[in-house]
Structures are given as C-alpha cells and as structure tokens.
Image (cartoon, rainbow, N blue to C red; front, side):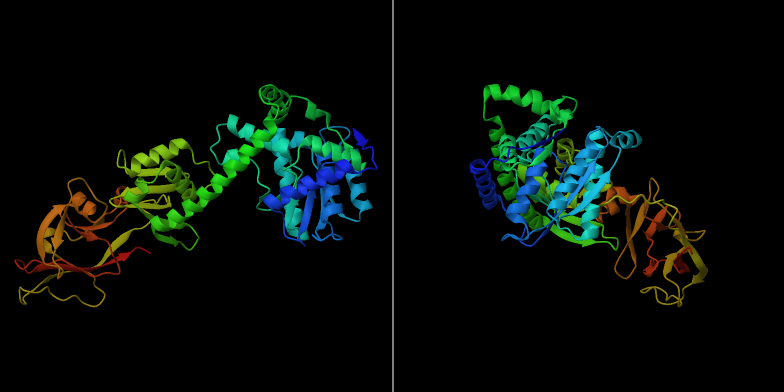
Length: 473
C-alpha cells in the first residue's frame, strides 16, 4: 500500500534525525567520500528514508560527493509489488539516478531450491546487487537496517545459540555493505519520512507472524519491553560492547597465530599448510584457543561453522587425551610430538603411484670388504642377496616388518621394528600406510626414493642385487 508523509514545514524532527545519524557516523565511520554506492531500496519507509537522506546529505552536491544508484527487487509475493517498484523507479528518475530493477518469483524459486522464501529472496537480492556492483563499478551496497533491526538480529542469534561473534549483530561497514542507520530507531525513521513528505509503501506481511523475524518483532520484543522499555537500545548497546571486545580479541588472535605458527606455506593451488607449536597452543586460554582455530579454519575457506564440539575435540587431540588426528571440512589436524600439522585432507588411492624395479642384475663383489661395490650409471639400489633371495620388491608396510638399520655409508649395523622406526622419524600415523618401501624377505630396506641412491651392504657377504627403482609411467 503506497502512502506519502505530511511534508511538515518546520523541519525540527528532520534536523534532529539527521544530527543523530551524523553523530553515529562520527562514532562508527562511513564510506570514503567520492565513493560510488548502490542503494537497496524496496520502497518501504526505511529504504525511502535512506535514499532521500543519501541524496540530500551525501550526494554529488554535498561534501561527501557520493555517486548514487538505486536497485529495487520485486519478489512477486504481493499484488502491490509491481506498483511499488514503479514508485521507486519514479523517485530515482526525479533525482536523475541510475535505476536497476529485478523481478523474481520468490515462491517458485523457493520450491525449486528447497530454501525458505526468506532465504531465497535474500540470496537472489544480494546476488543481483553484487552483479550490478561488478558491472557498473559500485563500491558499496547501502541498506536501511536500523536499531530495531539490530536488536532483532542479536536476539535471533542468541536464540540460535550463537557465540559472541554473533552477538555483535550487524556492523556499520562490513565488506561491501554500509548500514548508516544502525544508530536510529524505526520511530525515528517514520518521523523523518512523515516530516519530509516522502512516498513509501507498507508491506502488510510485515505485520503477520509468519517468519521468525516477524515473530521477534511482533511478539518477543513487546514482551521483553514489559521488563525493560528500553530493550531495543539495550540489545543494540550489547552489540557495540561485544563488537569492541571482538575487535581486540581478533587482533590478539592474529598476533598469537604469528607467534605460534612455525611453518606457513601454500601449494600451487593456494591450499595452505601450517605447523604450530603444540605445547604453546595447548596452554592458550579458552577465549584465544577457540578463536585461533576459527581463524585457522578460515584460512582454508571451508564455509562451514566451527562449533564448540569441534573445539573440545581439538583440545583433547592436542593435549594427547585421545587419538592424534582431527578432521573437519576436509581439513586435517595432526598432533605429532611437539608440533601440530594442519593441511587439506587429500585422499590418495594407494595404487595411483606405483614403482617398478628395472635392470635387476646379480653380482659378486671381490673387492675390499670395508666398502660397498660400485653401481653402474642409472642404478640407484644395492642390497645383499641373502636378505632378498628373489630380488627386491616394492610394497606397502605389513604387520611384523623390520627395517635394516644402516650407518651413513650404508653398512648394516642392526634391525628395528618398522613401526618404531616410523615413530622415531616422526612420520604421521595417517601417512604411514601410503608409503612405498623397498623390501626383501621380511625386511625393509628403505622408503622408495627414486631420485636417491640407496646402498645397503654387509661386510660378511659378497653377493648383491643392483638395479634401478623408477616410477611407473
């Protein structure tokens, strides 16, 4: 339903409103002067007030010199929506502003996607806004969220079990979103619209308790106001206090991350790999422990929520109270000895990398027993034949395997359980089954290293195998 304010001539309320917005702006900031901004305008009183305020207080003729465009979305949910879109279009034309309309059928889209009407409407709106920003060079999307909206947002996050980050509510500047009206109430806006004589439309569905936000506004907040008439301001103030705390804790988290991260590198595809100091991480206070891991998982851009259950499981892994491996959203965290290794989980098929023995030859050494026999060009493996009567084989580890221990020159000096050797070499548990080994008859000589020469010799024998280990093409 379209309406128009009374266009009062004294302007007292209007000046108070604008002073209130200016004071909030001074405290919380605004976009840089000269920016190109796209106003999200539905035609309701809030967004019409926003559009008018921007034109008269921040437009090209003002000190801020903002370049303004207007975007309006018709969701096809009410018969009046087409007329409302025309109203916004006309208002933009009156001031010579670029206008960008979009018509969607939110009901049909919701059925097709399986999302709620609210969710799909918001998603499609912002996809449209950002598409316009990219194509037309707008730097910010301006929305008319106000203090009552902030209170509803914080209350909704509280009900859903949000952490302190959610209790911040909406930020004045968040990425490409600017919300200059967060410091004024709905009543402030209605008074401004009335006194300015602005056209606007009322959405009757806003007065129906059919969505969660509507129920909070129509049922829950009025009930809370019986206990504290200033509950809207109280919730908004809570958001400001929590935001200040979060700003400090976020900076402290990044500082501690830089202290605790001993290795940080990226693969060719940009995937990070990190190593952290385990004991120092384990001793972090709870507030920083949680934020550190939320920050780390953010580096992997998983898009998933990092929950309190994940935090507790990680704490147990890092403190050695349970298994040494934690996986979430394809990110792997391994607590090994005094370090924590973090990387993208890569599921490798054990048969995708295979190796082969080529050029195998049996030989006898009649030279001095104090040194191994020399290999020919192209050979990279020498082993005693008595340890591999049928020649060397390439395989994964097996139960009961023992590895030959060698001095630096390759001379055998003993044997050890392969499992214990892998532990001594600090090979992560989950990586051991993927390793390939050069083996003989129930003995392991070495992990497969095609580019490395492996010499295993025994001064008590003269019979050897020589060959080359190569990756299969």
